[in-house]
Length: 170
Ligand SMILES: [Zn+2]
Image (cartoon, rainbow, N blue to C red):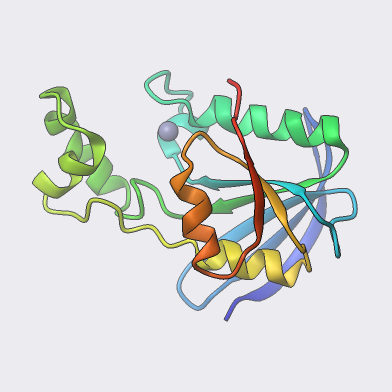
């Protein structure tokens, strides 16, 4: 169960959004909404995980910042859409795991394997909150902006209707 706590208008480089804060008893999640999405079908949607290095420190070692900008731009072009920002850095393992996995990544391992070698889960993320937020917003179906088709299955597991997947061009 997720609860909508508070909301406000937010002006961005990519237009005016509504920012809504949700809490599920464990972590906060944010929805950035443009336009009227209630009862909307094929609403453009991006589910985006936290990344301190990319979003705060302007790291050039990941594409998180560029992906957020591409998603905001696509939504601005469409005139409506939803970005859901989940507090699950390091595939849900947190920033410690991210930093602890770096030596293994440098040794050539895939990110998921590097997390396991560092003593964390390969992928500890959950997309339940994202699906619950879309339900709260009364979005009927989404076109998911992602370069990872598996994310659609993650959302469908929690009853979100993903009508299509669209590549995120960065
Ligand atoms: Zn990143």
